[in-house]
Image (cartoon, rainbow, N blue to C red; front, side, top):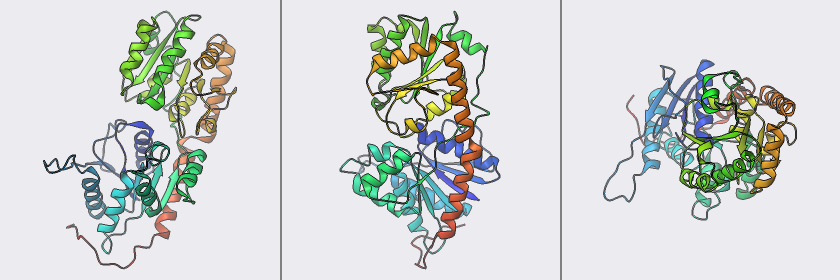
Length: 387
């Protein structure tokens, strides 16, 4: 198949999932065209079968901001016609589904372009609920030819918020060959020179990720066990987290490493992953950590309980309860046998339920289902692209 994929390049799990999906589709012999503002961070190597098409929005004084949604629609239509795409898969409803809808409409009568929209979380639970976006979000989802959600929680939320049934659940996935435990590597010794326990947090440091809670948890743990907190990522709350670490007297043991293209390097040497999010529709970093045999201490919200089994692969606690999460972390780092059992259980869940070999075929089957059911109609084209 020839598949177009649109995603956000740098923020959140949607871009990560789209990147990994593109890579796996190419590995299975399909052709993928990434249509986005910039190249997703995890796609470092392109080829004839994995191409990137940059969207450039016009910056004109009359407009208060560049019209990315319209520029994206034009680029999607152009690439779909030129490359004869079989399907366009957009990640995150707003604005990508709207752009896809416009692209499909521009091509009617000349090139069929079924659209699959994958919902990732805040496009439903945060952006989609806003009064100014709710009607257009509902329209975008309803106008898609296929819709998937990354968890049962998000599927139910979509139905509840928008009254739209028929959302197929295809969960996030992990390459279990890439995300594996690595003992004795140089990065571990550099970050933990005296064999401290390593607590790791991975996110885009938005308020919903509650990165300051990570610092609060770590400060309590560090009183009892030599340890360090590795903060992977960047975002608006990075400064506040660093300031809180200084206030608590632990700044020297809180290491901000910024955005990293190889998250597996950091997860594979961790002792515990912290995921104290206020909302989380799946918890991709939790799954990736579990694949690396890392116990997870997370909040009992959203889709996280579908990934992390409390008391088996880690611990789930209430949002904001840093005391309970600190005790959970201490229970793991003080008991090597428990940590090993939880790590092995997490790896087993990743391999048996969420591996790429299990999930990617679900996307391919759904693509075929959507393409077969697509009715392009017989309307006259709005735009004819030169081939």
